[in-house]
Image 1 (cartoon, rainbow, N blue to C red):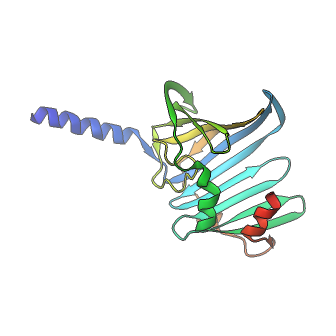
Image 2: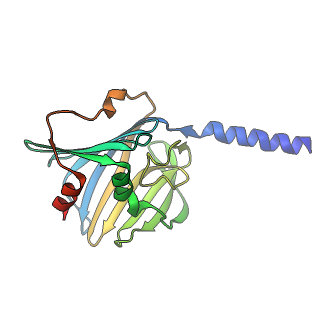
Image 3: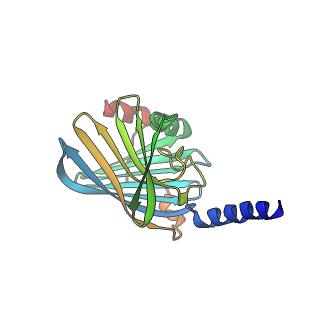
Length: 211
């Protein structure tokens, strides 16, 4: 009996040691857009930075730059958009954050046992459908875990970290593919919200502009 318990203990320890915790670091994604299977425009770059409960997500493309900053502990953040000479800041509350990510909650995933390598990590596939009929395909790895599911607001319910994901609606598909991951510390200043240089637009005003 003792030998059996020791075997279980050492197996559990080995599994936990093999899994990396992503409590701080940076992930870089290449973002490609396809229409009818044909790539359009240049690839964009998305950068996600995490430091405990702090999140910074950047999207850089030929059109402009969008940065989302959020502190899951204080429930405050901002959406920063730079389009040409326009620089707009939209403050975000926890209620706004929940509303933005509501479509990713309570998803019913269909899991596949297929194993695919992404930047050195073994990944499994998961499929889901959003309420607006958008199809999602995620490649996630169980070799990395996030300590705070709220930071990974889109795929925090998955048993691992998403290293590739695609959204397909109609004839358009957008693919985010991780090209690099770093566990190095991220300067806390990266999560500061600018106090000047931006025109402030409320969340409700921002929503009207997107309609």
